[in-house]
Length: 432
Image 1 (tube, rainbow, N blue to C red):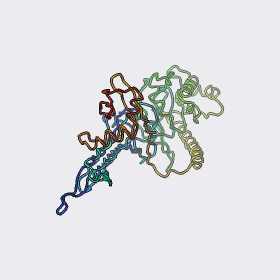
Image 2 (tube, rainbow, N blue to C red; image 1 turned 60 degrees about the vertical axis):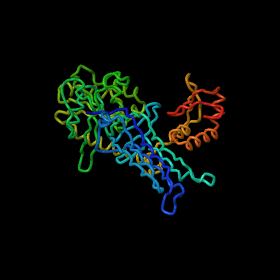
Image 3 (spheres, rainbow, N blue to C red; image 1 turned 90 degrees about the horizontal axis):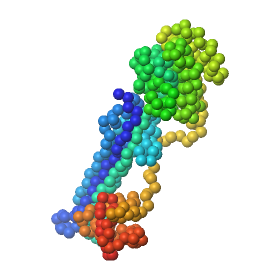
Image 4 (cartoon, one colour; image 1 turned 90 degrees about the vertical axis):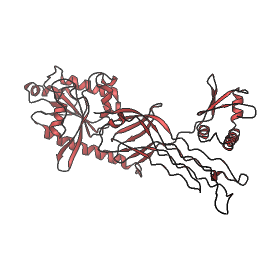
């Protein structure tokens, strides 16, 4: 089954908890704090696997969570960092945030890796909080929650050449003729309902990848027919091969088909309309196909090469493949010249830039005052509310951040409800 778009929930693993512990050994019955830190949680990482061609695995696994870091222990033994959750994706996978549409990663190279959801850091043990004025801290931090978000995975096939044409123009027959691919072929529209890839061997050591894109019809750029679902697969190709039914077996005019196809690609993307293209007049093994060649040639712009072929008999195929191979070499040389001007890549790993921390804000939702802010919400998550010292520390941080003054400015009164992350507090003049 070919799946090229899925939505998944990803969450980095939570950090392990720090521990409260004190050294208790012979001759040292009242030793100092020795609680270790928790280990960091594992991140969710996507890795490009060249052997994959679909996002099918994510269709049945839509909740992806990294493992949690282990908790700290006494004698300053720190918890172990959890392993990252690595998931294979096919080349050409693009990852977007579902809520904002922001592109997180564009994964094209084999072995390329992208950290999608970071694991949370481990909580600090009580050893970390010992100071000259607080020699025996009896609190520790809980692990930081892992980053969580919903993402959309979208696959754009990586191919050198994209076959474009109306249904029944002979694209699948052409692909089966020039490569080892075995697409479904039959005499009715939309036989091909998924893109097919085939490797074309031109000569020893010389080959290219050809993609048969499902039939495009008028209105495809608006999602009509197979429309938007497959138009994106031609975006990454270097060269477009327009397959026209020269024999008019479906009662359509090949030149009108060419104009309609060009229009659909242009309306979908201006970049597509600028891609190099070659026109193939297919079905010249039929008398009607051969007789229309002169008319087709006259109706095309002079800048576009026309190749008459028969995908059934193989006539004209080899000449076309040699031309495509030479044209791809020329385009690749142009790309190399462009890339050489850019700084070299040192690493294939992609770290999504951290977002600007959310500022501290207060919003009244009709029932309670909701306090939002990345730092303050993490502090609440990492506080052990069963530990009196830990709660006192949190209150001190609230005061230092100016939270009480901010709440009063927003009109908060004695006894009002405050929500921060998963916790609720009652506001008093003395503090929370």
